[in-house]
Length: 347
Ligand code: KG4
Ligand code: ZN
Image (cartoon, rainbow, N blue to C red; front, side, top):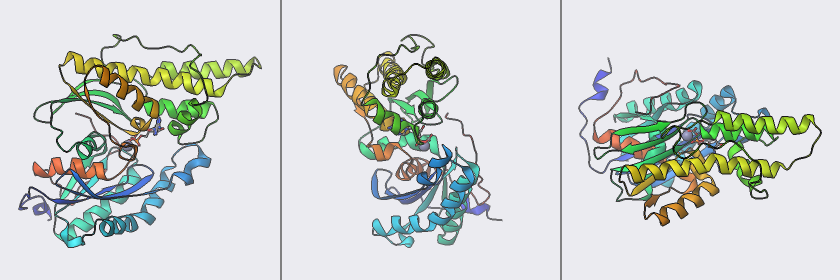
């Protein structure tokens, strides 16, 4: 009945896209013009409501999105200094993420797009993380190498001339962010684990021997479960023997092992594929140690590093607007049957 919602739209070169993101515990809305210019980016987070449970509680997240979504969209429209009638398309995260959480943003976006008579652009959250780089380097154009490091994904990707993804490698088990979160819990740090490990690591030394993947091992693939288990065993053994240990040293040693391999493999890809631009995306890209190491190594190897500011690495809607633009130009619109997906393939 509403199939025509996918068709008949004139594609503008400089569209004003309203983007909505609700895949986890951040309710976000942004206005992005022409895929490169952020007119506004608003985030409301339910993070503090999850701390006492040690992780995101899906139902709490969904309820928080329901309470926040209309306010966050209003804020995005107001701070962009536009009217709803100026919106040319609505981009929305349809996956990957928590289903109940995704459905809130998705249903809101569908109703809004329908009432405005504009297209709905379904956006993959993972691709959104990678598209954040287009917002910081307005001249950025494929081909380049991308490093994706988030709570759900770890991958090295060659973005080809036409924008297609050639996945060089990914994780065989846990994602790097997931390992940060599990190690944080093991040493008694609150959710969210990544930023808390980073903070504690500042006081520690890299003195605990942990398994490290060798440079050439597994090609471009990663494996974080062995590293995570080694930390868990180290902590449990020390506790059982009644030996004291420095949690800060655990945090620092883990962080070095987890991050160094990301840097090594991302740079190896640039070398082997002859690409002199590296873009980085995902929550773990907010990590100060990773940022520092990438900056130093890329400078040494004369590789141009496109590293979005921290606020564009963790979950936000501006990145959804950037990826939404790429899909908009291709006319990849959805109709009102668009549904949420817990998992989405990277390719
Ligand atoms: O990209 P993201 O916000 O959500 C997903 O799409 O998965 O990533 C969340 C992950 C969490 O595992 C979190 O602990 C990690 O990113 N993270 C960090 C830092 N900030 C967020 N990990 C290390 N250092 C950080 N500063
Ligand atoms: Zn994310």
